[in-house]
Image (cartoon, rainbow, N blue to C red; front, top):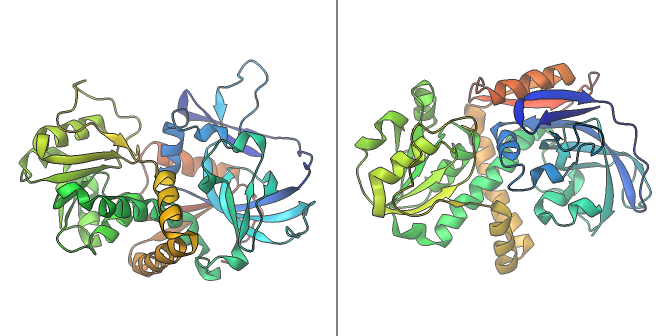
Length: 368
């Protein structure tokens, strides 16, 4: 069973019964146990063509609707249930990039003590960070009782860590203020949490009136400003971290700060269905898309994988403890509940405190 999305209309979905795939040489069949659904996954769909997210788990390419349907990637846990690889013993669990499905067949390669990569032909051109599967029994991030947090927040926090690291790596482009849109989103919260630990930086969250109180209560933003009030912000040197992808908000920020906006980075598209009121070019710097795997590759080369893992891990455990004060995990068991969770995200009907943990198996009972 696979959950698919109409690439031309993200609100249209369907369930597909795929016949079991034969194992390739060096292959393994993974039973997809559970995964998180967040606004990050909607971003994957929005940028599915531009950033090739649809290519990780291709939908059927035959029939009259070939190419119309796509499989949105998610992050979660899976268990090896069949294998031709000695190291991938049946029963071993992994964490990584998965389809919203009941199973996934992988071509395992580049195995080491911590995991492996899926080297299927269609995935070879993709960023290695998305093709890596980590053994839970060798993952320093993994905690048996905190798997829900890992699914909901870890991929987002890794992006948050890299946003903070990228800005620090560039001395925040000489700015003393960081503006973050969609401030109630989990990627934005993680970035604010990291940036707030740096001396001399002022972090301002931009959000809707409906989410302003929640964002203020978090305590990781120095100030919280409604989208309608951007024009009243002090015009100091600033950097803009665009998690919303709202063109009107971006235009307002650029217009307010103009040449004092030192850098403008596009991270996500939580306002994916927003239509700009005015199609006007940005003033100030050209907005640039932030592709997290590029920063991962840079730091892996400069620091080495063990140092990168250690630094991210230390930051993660601090953050993981902090989110206990506000995160509420909501379980969605079975395809119908998964569909509801997805539609709520697409339509923006999700309380920012909620983190949805899903499974396509109607009979799954989670211990963690």
